[in-house]
Length: 279
Image (tube, rainbow, N blue to C red; front, side, top):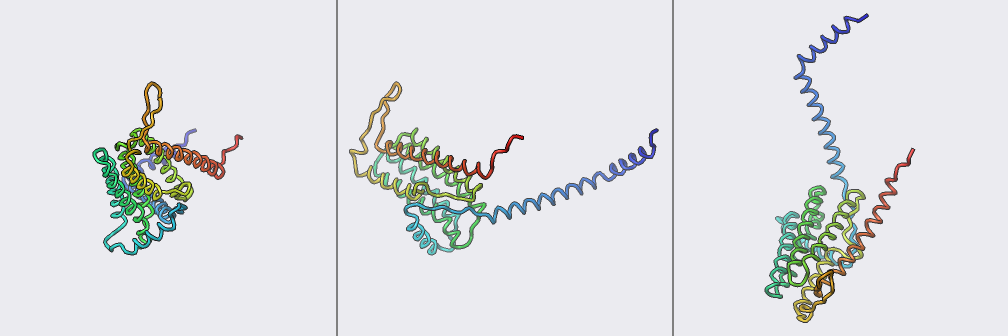
């Protein structure tokens, strides 16, 4: 036997929901917004309080730290980290322009070397100034720093590849490997809370110094500028300059560092996040 009261109660309840549908939607919507706002605040608080540990073990680290602190203490009050980041970008553009113009005159390599100094000044000092003034912005700074690093590196490597001293294809491969290492650093900063700035005692500052020395050698040594090594390659001959050979050595070193790094990182993450056993 069917219970008529059941149908009556459900019809009445349905009519109530139909009449008050707009109010109920507002209540549900407001509650969703409220809980989403709470969740967002919690995530922002956790992210803002967590900063990666900087690992800096390069050869010039001690001297560089003192120099950067000395410069930070003497920056005008109107100077801020964003301005210094932009100066670092200008330095990368100057590097590219100097290398490209060296097709017309080798002495434009001095302009590229000046660009490395400008890039070091802006890129290295922006974070130091923020820490010195206690104006760190971990979220915004992390995003901007890594974004500009990728842009700056692209200008540097492309500029070198467009010079008469390095093959363009080699500079592109170097850029890819360098960006892969940069990506690995970013992932570890997020997963480990570890921001590694150096590999094999070499960091960005040492890289810039090596490039400045190489530029000076190329300016003063004409035999080295015109020297080439011809190697058979498939159906053609591969011509390599002195700077190409240096680039190949650096490439092999970066590849080795990358392989060792991802092997060590993968083993570490496998230990803290083990594979599930089959039931």
